[in-house]
Length: 281
Image 1 (cartoon, helix red, strand yellow):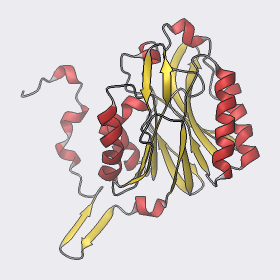
Image 2 (cartoon, rainbow, N blue to C red; image 1 turned 90 degrees about the vertical axis):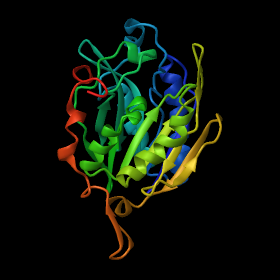
Image 3 (cartoon, rainbow, N blue to C red; image 1 turned 180 degrees about the vertical axis):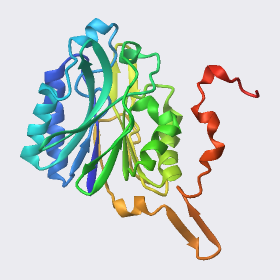
Image 4 (tube, rainbow, N blue to C red; image 1 turned 90 degrees about the horizontal axis):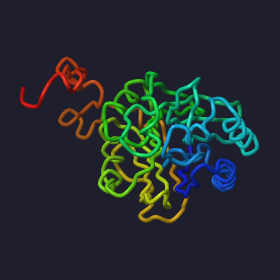
């Protein structure tokens, strides 16, 4: 499958304008053969809101008008897309990513790990378990931005059978090393494809650094944006490579298995809330 990541600028609160730009980029990527087109975190809505009330003005349920418009575009171009938006569920706000195809919403994800920044200061932490959805024969899992810094998120999706893990993101200055190393690390740790799609531009004084990247199951970089220009990254992925967790490097002498070699009985600390245990105790 050919996939595409759209590194683009986003206008705060300007949903119609953002969707118009996403429409053009989706058409361009589909014209280049991409079957899955991924946009940044909050691509439809913007991110640097200063109050819950302000974010609520552009929030929508999933499914809703935003997802219906993107689904219509997918029908026109014969493709699928994943993108970020502010989700409204009753009186709660979520930083969400949604996977949409010609048939409508395939799945959505609510950001679990929330930094003290922008929209995430006013949203509810994600309340749903990780899940994997299908785009053709590719199993796709979603995370958002800060989630990528917690390897448990990616590992959970890998254990669910994900071939490709998406990370729509809004990385600001300070995240340069995350952009440089985390995408490749999450990929090789789990023998999966990992795709981080960041935005560019400036919003209320926050500059976004770009550096989107697609990594392969061996941690190799398949495509990357080295600067802060708007651009589309492309890569060809083979889900069978991501499912081959038993890696034979020298038959009978050097073999590893990314899943079978785990020792979950030794990982109990990972399930303890951090306030119950201090380092060294």
